[in-house]
Length: 444
Image (tube, rainbow, N blue to C red; front, side):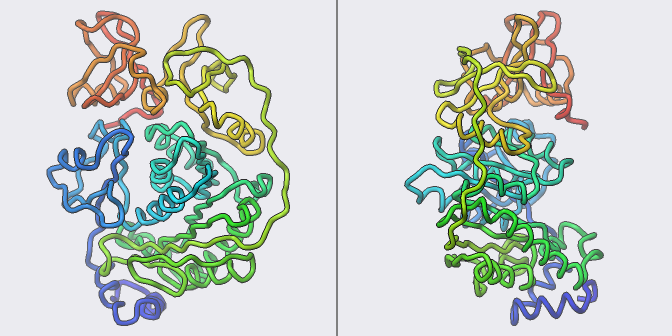
């Protein structure tokens, strides 16, 4: 207990009452829990479970996830780079479970915004729950964090997801656009004390007050973009009532919303609280609200006029390809045909980091297939011959090293590991040039 400021101890006792000692002891002495969540579009949870020697029980609130009794070196597992699974705190997985329930029960297509999305854990969970007619915008306000978000979303493989880099106030331009917003807002991080020792040193009552005020500003700024009757999932990884129930009460009173009760974990006045020592995971608060007050329509994005579509059998039916200009040169990109106008509308009003699927770079008359394509669920796996790599070869590939595969056909090949695509090589016979992105290169 002496590890923590007295003000934090007092606040924690006020929230957890007779269970506070269990929480404080777990924070002081315990180690963070490790869990992984399978990507159902690429591998079944049961098959993934069988791969891990230290696999434990499944996470009760997430059927695609299970605990690990020991933490391996995940970066040395090629399946992680193939987007087969995501490493995530099990408590945080409940937020994705709430989003999945809202999406699955909707009778109409939904536009979903993950407002504070980096590094992408909750966005990948939402993406796994999307139907083909739904659209996800994964946003991160801090520019330096958008690259890891975009990489994780590309590897997850959903073609109906967009990555943006905008301040919450920018979404006022997209008034009454979103049916569901997840706001996993920056917080004082009390629930992460086991994972981040620095968070303890940074904690103070003043920081809690600053975080609570910033969270209100974030929600107020993004509120106009939520439709009347739309859903808000409000979450933090902290414990105190100022940043949790207190802010939910403020949202209901000042912005116009009603709380939808949730079941599970520790029930608070307005939401649910997960905490070490009580639930098996780190700290997480989540509340589900429904907007009751209408918002005036604002600026609507205009779809840019599309160039003539290009036939490309490298992608699955239902995707439309276009030649586009990018900072890296000419590119062939594919969009889900049924969502193209919605994606282009968002592109016209927000700072988009990634949208659609990067199919190929265009070099004169040649098309050079991109790793994004191989990792996408829109990839036509019959487009290229494939070569199955053993683990050491797969790690060579992920380090961007040249491979020697003399028995394989010449030309572009899809390289796979345990039958999941990792990317492409161009086989010249004596060696195979590696087309894996240098920015993603494994440095181990």
